[in-house]
Image 1 (tube, rainbow, N blue to C red):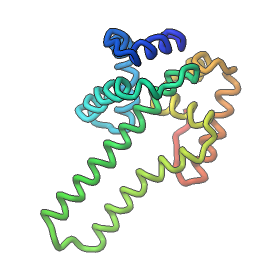
Image 2 (tube, helix red, strand yellow):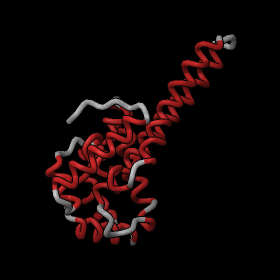
Image 3 (cartoon, one colour):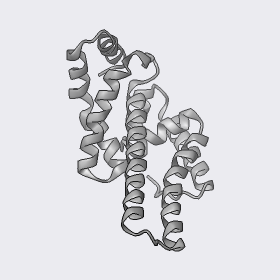
Length: 182
């Protein structure tokens, strides 16, 4: 689906056209699932959050701004919902641990806090990147797209895509995140 076709579908979704949402669903469910599964690593949770993406797309159709690259828009929305789900699950686990073991020691509190902070740190580090770098890293790492695919979608030369990717990865490494080279 091209940007123009997607924009047209979203315009119809804004008007309450469920068939337009169905077209988007049929086209992008596997793509969004891949992005979400990449964040969550759990099939059942990824299925639930994938469904939530389309509900959110329906509910927030009036907030969509055409012409900004719909695949990156969808990937960002999916990634954010997946991260929200991780935070929610961690909060639920913390609540259960507090209920089950009222005498938790300080060491396990620190471990849990470190885990929670590390999840937030990835998001914070990604927010430090230039928008173009963040978009390319999302597409490459979370969506497992090739540089050629990213180049075609963004309409940017492949050399520029690879350069921005490498610059973004360098910045993330400065924040302590280690990536295997693609």
